[in-house]
Image 1 (cartoon, rainbow, N blue to C red):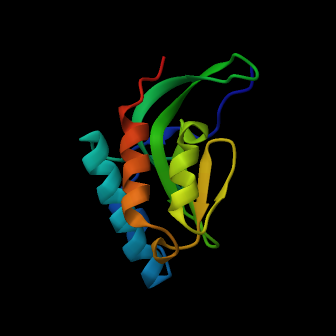
Image 2: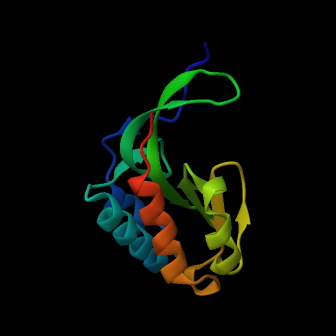
Image 3: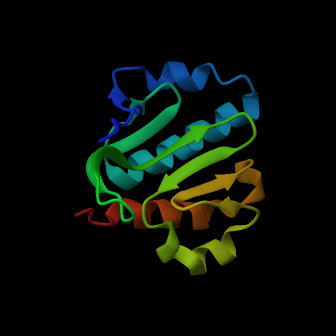
Length: 135
């Protein structure tokens, strides 16, 4: 079995966010961080060099059946956009219709900046994902 390279580590989330070059992206990162903290009631952890995650869970890949440690919700302020990781994204199709400008991947929501989306809808989506039981 191939080992997952992105692992939880002791890196500083604050230091990581403070190094984000774009001021607006830094501010948006802090807003997303607070939404996720409130939704989970937990502190964030760094995963790899550029992912911020909440709740270490055992995730089983639906395609391979392989299990690995991962986070239940998280995000990364990438240069071009935010990658927001929500494990139950396909279950939130109604919210996605109301969200605003975005793209999606299998378990990832991509937004350029918070200004492009309805923050209340995003908050609801984050809360919904945080409440989901991972088996």
